[in-house]
Amino acid sequence: MGIQTVITIMGWLAGIVMLILFIMFIQDIFQEKHAVRRNYPIIGRLRYFLEKQGEYFRQYFFANDREEMPFNRATRNWVYRTSKGLGGMIGFGSTNDLREPGSIIFVNSLYPKLEKECLPSPPLIIGEQCETPFIAQHIANISGMSFGALSAPAIKSLSQGAAKSKIWLNTGEGGLSSHHREGGGDLIFQIGTAKYGVSNEDGELCDHKLKDISKHVCAFEIKLSQGAKPGRGGVVPAVKVTEEVAKIRGIPVGKTSSSPNRHTDIQSAADLINMIQHIREVTGKPVGFKTVISSKIYLEEFFDVILKQGLDYAPDFITVDGGNGGSGAAPQVLFDHVGLPLNESLPILTDTLIEAGLRDRTRIIASGKLITSAKVAWALCMGADFTVTARGFMLALGCIQSMQCHQDTCPTGITTHNKRLQKGLVVDDKASRIANYAHWLNHEVDVLAHSCGLVNAREFRRHHARIVNAAGLSVPLDQLYPYPATPD
Image 1 (cartoon, rainbow, N blue to C red):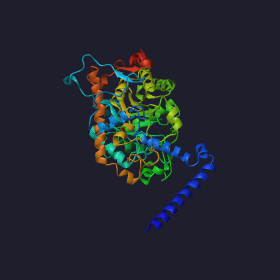
Image 2: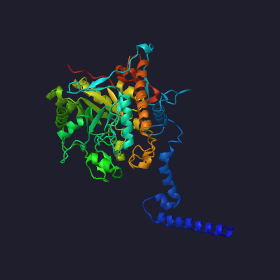
Image 3: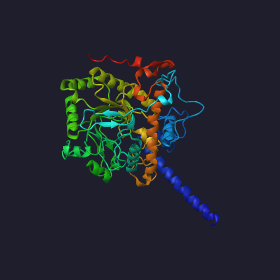
Image 4: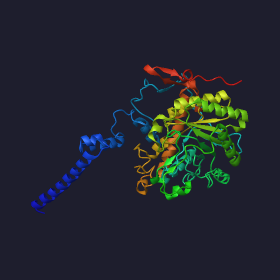
């Protein structure tokens, strides 16, 4: 190829580039949606490009390991290390500033328990009065994540990992898939507002389907709301509604799966109690509900009705989700501004149960960014019996927080049905990571308990932890949230 030919080709390429830039220039000048592009044609496009790329590059270039949201680098690295079986050991010192408001400080004992005195946290029964109670083996478990929102390999990995570590897996509201049953472990079936998997053609609860599902699960959870979107039903974008997802949910292929804002047959405390009791009678399994709390009023009304009808009508458990929780797709306005965070809602639920005299009857499951052992231990101090996390186990699967869960473009294959992207998720490997993370999450809660002079983590109470307030001063939890008086 002669020099003249090369010059000609370069000229043509330069001409094409100039033509493209000219077209972009004209488009930017005459479009009316973006002021930056209108004022700074072509160059202004770079601003939007970099803004978008910032979501991905922040995971590699961030000044402080504890600044990134929703989970900072230090927290993610702890999950990554424990899921790989590397433990939670660090050297030289912590980057956690104990003067930062909101920091948790546990009250260590001068006389911590010796290893020979320590015991792992014992199992706890949910629904002791039920025909078939659920004996839950561990404190920290897997929160609801539907097949559809997550890929088949991801659900299989969660199922197998949960079975290996003897923790439960919540199915999420998308119905019971074969992938959830892959590991053969404990399952909690979540009934969302669309009642996927347990409804008849009219969208009403189907007793026959409830009985069939009950053969494979340990308990049922009625989802009233979740942290990502209180007041908004579950959403799976159309691009993620494959034939398999559509068949399990009973919905059209390729159309957005959008659940109602609430259960059409639950519009009062009495309705909720009736549904709980009905499902319990049909299945013989423990039944509870999941909700986000923003006021004590609704809880007081609910418990008042229970006390009038009798303790047998009380839910076997209540899952309280913080307004800062949630792995699913949701409107940003709901993500950002609706629902109390768990540090407020959990003590409200605990104290209201105590005041009603129902604390020993109803188990409390805490949910909402509880992905580290310290956060789990804090929840136990505040009154929780169990904790669940979704995003913690997503990180254990290999999530890199790319914020593409709703787009079917997840680069790690966790929240996409793109077969090419799913190839990066090897089920056997990820199941082991799930089991490792579950082990360390539960084990280190007991380590914290032993440091506080307790035999196991179920002995945690509010006086065992402090919360840092303004000016770097900490306050004991039992002073910040005094225990209420119990009924006579």
